[in-house]
Image 1: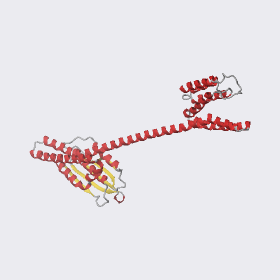
Image 2 (image 1 turned 90 degrees about the horizontal axis):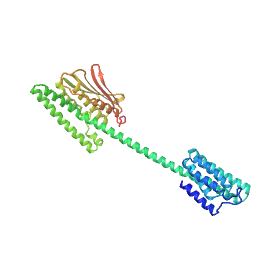
Image 3 (image 1 turned 120 degrees about the vertical axis):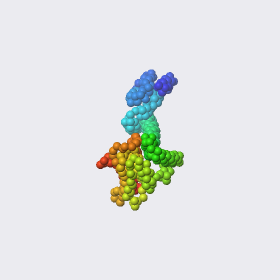
Image 4 (image 1 turned 180 degrees about the vertical axis):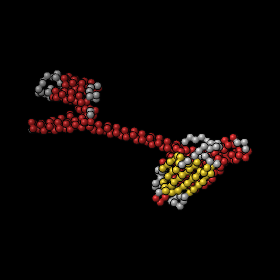
Length: 385
């Protein structure tokens, strides 16, 4: 609106001062240049909302202005309408208008040379290019810069969104890892404490109560020690310090012996069968996952298994022993002694550990036994993150 108002006022000032662009025109009435001036001002009002319509109206007004004495403000406003048509118009219009205006400028120059055969014909061609082609070219340049800036902004927003998604996934993965570690470290000790405390409360036998309290004390002390270790790892940086402090398969004997002592009162006998010795050294994440799977399976057996053997088998499978197999089986059935409730988080954690390493996991009843079996990659290059 400001452009239209100031363009109209400027044109009126030029008209009042009798400052025209030419003489000897077809329509000699000095009031006629006001008509194209008013129409061009009206076209300026449409330059943003409907640039194609504004360009069509402005082109008609410019041609009409050339048949009168002419007003410089009308021509100046037309250059702005041409610029706006390219900048705010459709992408197709932005591609076609500069080409069309270039051809018009070229044809006007050639036609003027053929008709006038004088150097002034080149001046007409230059003026025509300044009025139609140069504004269109300027509009293309500004539009390209604007589109490039918009593309860069969208790319920055997309990058920020992806970074936020990565951060969220990393936080979720770290929380899941911490949940698995907390469960694996504490669940077996708390399960033993719950079972033996229930036995101590339900049986009126001083010797049994004394043994139960001993197991409770042992598991509570070990649970506190492992909790302190985990807290120390988190304070020291978490995953970077984990491999050096994490349990390995070399300590499976102690783990099985600990559960054998805790499960003796429930009629469970824990047996370790390791046939996987002599192969290539296992990656630290694989050893940790195998240890945690055995630990959680023994804890589940302590809570739910019927009296009988609990067998832990380690072995190598695949060509050249490239897969580590971990299998823990216990007797299905109702146990007579006290038990502990389960939430299913242990199976979820074991499945997640195996999936992260690119292995295979299965758990379920097989021939009257509850079996947990996992296959893990036994070589560094095959293990997942």
